[in-house]
Image (cartoon, rainbow, N blue to C red; front, top):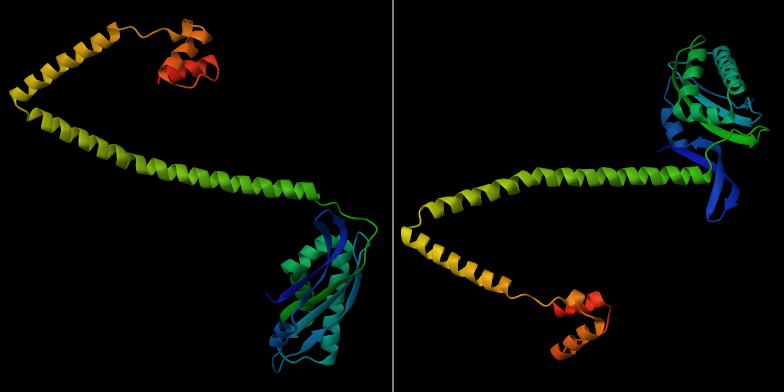
Length: 255
């Protein structure tokens, strides 16, 4: 929350602005809160050149455990400067950015200055890209970034759908149990019926079978073998529309 990042627009592609990291700054209120009585404050301004030719200005800020002499402050500055210059010379600008923002560069400085005096707090108070280098480290293209965003979005949707399916599967046993319970109840009720009821059911069953047999015996007209003109005549007689293909005419007659 107390770090402000700065980006510089290098290119415009349609609606997208392509930027590069131009430095960062720790808010002054946060730096001011680190200062305490009876402690030494040491800061410096270091101009470094990265391995890929970027000219970077770095401003470290250090608070010692107790009061220190002027000679100790000078030794802390020299140790800090050597650590920053060597780290920048061995890394590209991209790598140096990650080290500054992740705290790795601060750890390297702490290891170097502890040989002179104990340091309580180390902050890279500010960094600034003064001049671009001659070699640009390749990164993902805009299309690749969009593809990655689409892939992540699709993965989230698939995970959500899987979670919903699991919930449905969990609720299915409850529905089956309820259905089985209702089936058992119906079986119990059927066992308790009297002989008169069973006789009536048999009579009704016989009547239904006779009706079904009569309906099956009466053959329905074979509309598929008829011509379109014949089908239209039947539709006219039934008072139904006669427009459409043969399948539609047959379906309309069978309604």
